[in-house]
Length: 59
Image 1 (cartoon, rainbow, N blue to C red):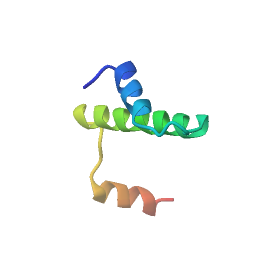
Image 2 (spheres, rainbow, N blue to C red; image 1 turned 135 degrees about the vertical axis):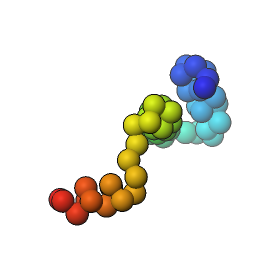
Image 3 (cartoon, one colour; image 1 turned 120 degrees about the vertical axis):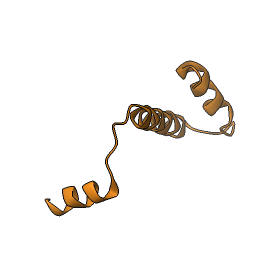
Image 4 (cartoon, rainbow, N blue to C red; image 1 turned 90 degrees about the vertical axis):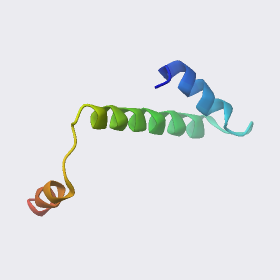
């Protein structure tokens, strides 16, 4: 996985020149969430779809 700074710079570099700060912040937020999700998968911190359905049913 790329270093966070480099990945952020690559993401920002792909945005159009007229991208506003809200768009930049949203893209960086999503990048962070994707990275954290990938790390969770690598660490086995996931649940099955059946477990998720049971959890939702308990709401």
